[in-house]
Length: 272
Length: 266
Image (cartoon, rainbow over all chains, first blue to last red; front, side, top):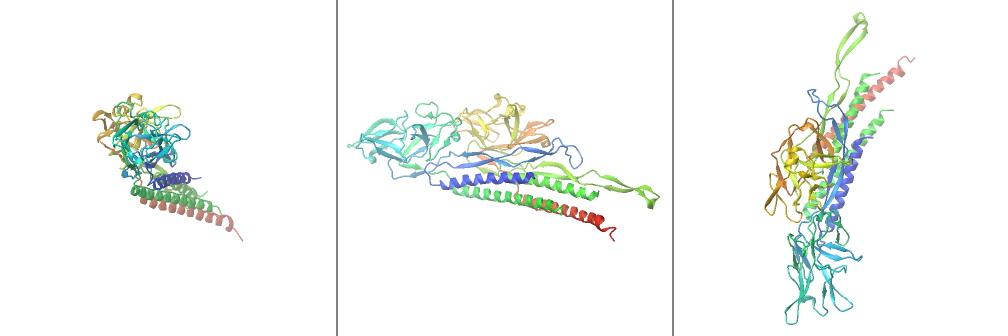
């Protein structure tokens, strides 16, 4: 019927996606290690309305009269900017300062990555303690093994250096190194990581292979801060402004549909 | 039959086309680097109307003067005015302040690679470290942008694990080492820019690339320059103009109805 109906519909659908993204950001405003997302749009292809176009003086123009057909969502990009470090009472809480990610072994045995350093200790059958995420997935060290702490060590005695080396204080308050370093991994393109549930990220072709900070040369190493958690990097004021923009844009597109509809109804009334 | 019927019809079609263009502006009111479009209306070429077999003038043809029989689109124009900036703090986001365009090496479905131009600086880095658009098309450096060469030599490759710094002229640095210049070019005449879609423009035959003196701003994106107030006013304008054309058709229809049904009735 009229192109404008579909153009406006594409605008409304895009803005819906934008609101979905904003709502998810706001819902995760207190999620540890959450990275905000943003919907980005691109224009759709153009059609030629009229081949010959002239200026007001009647001179021929080099391009024909073109009309665009609306918009689409080009990408939803995650913004991996550092979130604030929040003080935590937990001795096994860790925050990353830098571009690294923690590695965890998921239920299916594959390795996933996360910025959420809210770790817990789980007691195994042998009485040893394993560092796990709050969902119980083991956290991996730089060699890809689970991090084990001998049984009987009080959680308050666990010490993690800024390089990620883990150890504990014995009864004489001497540092006992466990010879394990918390694995930190970087990606060529973190925006290409696939987001899974439970704050986990999965490697994709777009992100590139995980680069182990311990073995890959020329990386800017990140540091681990024990007793801190990385807060969400969602900026509520930004999201509110984005919400206003998205909602108003949605509204205007619906107005364009109404106007097109009115025009069609008038065309309909021509024949009585 | 009656000239005015067709004149009013062209008016309605023209308003519909204007509505299409306006709706596209509204749909893209949140698209990065989108430039508002508009159209001019032009009257059809005037024609000399001649009354023939005029009995008042001894049956000689008599000129009535010029009449225009409708309206069409004159041209579609684009308002290349600066859009507002939005700070994103993403190091791969760039905005252009001034007259200029980023050059993109774009490969279409048929596998043909060509240079396209865009104001949308929402870039990212792929796993090989090339600076690309969100659709994965390569951003070109200054030399390739000016030469219009979409080849691999013009791609921008960086180390994605190091911070990227882009200065105002588009020079990009890593570890304080100058690596190259992000391509920003301008055109002698924007009339030679055709829209491709996907936020991109292509240069048609006759267009000339020239260096740009625009500034590149890292960590910001240029928003759409659509002014929603003027679009809404325009929308009222269009719907009313459409309505009046429709009324003209109805009136002519009424007149014809009289001519057909009432004249000659006993």
